[in-house]
Amino acid sequence: MKEKIELLLQEIENLKCNTEKDIEETRVRLLGKKGEVTKLFEEFRTIAPEMKREFGQKLNILKNKAAAKIEELKENAASSGTEQSSSTDTSMPGDPLPLGSRHPVSIARQEIVNIFRKFGYDVAEGPEIEDDHHVFESLNFPPNHPARDMQDTFFISNGHLNPLLLRTHTSCVQVRAMESMPLPIRIICPGRVFRNEAISARAHCIFHQVEGLYIDENVTFADLKQAILLFAREMFGPDTQIRMRPSYFPFTEPSAEVDVSCNICHGKGCNICKGTGWLEILGCGMVDPNVLEASGIDSKKYSGFAFGMGVERIAMLKWQVNDLRHYFENDMRFLSEFSHCVEV
Ligand code: PHE
Image 1 (cartoon, rainbow, N blue to C red):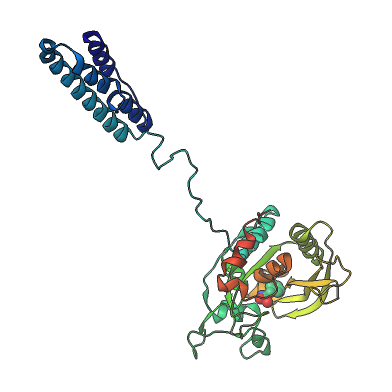
Image 2: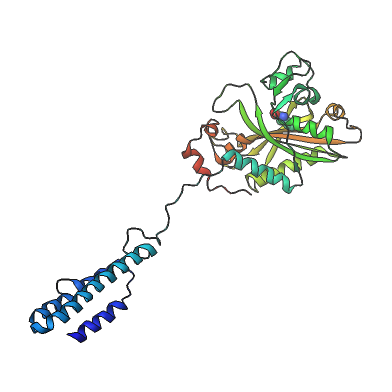
């Protein structure tokens, strides 16, 4: 019995268990109803009375040491947090956080900008609150000219010679560039514009444009056509065709509206292109000499072209969005449809 006690004492001294399960198993093996220490207590009953004193003390020490060691192991396991049977499994993957995605208008604007950047255009920006001079006057809209009605304007201050207003197009950024930048100029002007229009599926009072301007010696209509064709093919696919229809803008002469072949039916006619096979994407033309002269550019030496497009419209055609109002409603079901779109 003496030996058994010594052996168990040694074993308890060297006990090493990490998990709650191991510790509990050890406790049962030593102190449980049929445990080794418990068994020794049973044996104790049968030993000679003169030995009882000595062994009684030893057994009590053994029992106390075993209990203390089990407690110590339990504390260690809890503080090191390594027990695998705990309810937290740190090896599990975390809960996924829902990620937002970029707004389709922002994706389309960036795509347009990237395409023209590849062609060598710089990005120019200007104020959203503008004056009459930069939005109309210097772009060949004389006061009271009916062409001003083409763009319903939000005026901020009325009655002055040069009232403040919310810009109706980003052509005013081009004017600022012509006034201040050295020639040649090759820029695109992305930005938010404002028109006093009733909100519907096809019109909104706030939308985004990207306009472009190229001024140098000997710039011709052929250059304009080539730039637009290359843009259309980058944006809508390599088989895209363009056609130009004569149009009118006060600041360009000649002016044109550009259609691209419908990227849904490839020109055969469908309900997106209303059976025509063509989709209108932008307005453009050769910068009117009056506009060049108003910004101090010699129109005998220099010529240039300009173009302007609505970003929402380009995005509608590219991704078949049928209602402009979707862009402004922040409905997650609509916005998350664009999470897969990658810029070119
Ligand atoms: N500024 C015009 C608009 O907002 C677009 C345009 C730009 C047309 C440049 C021709 C040339 O409608």
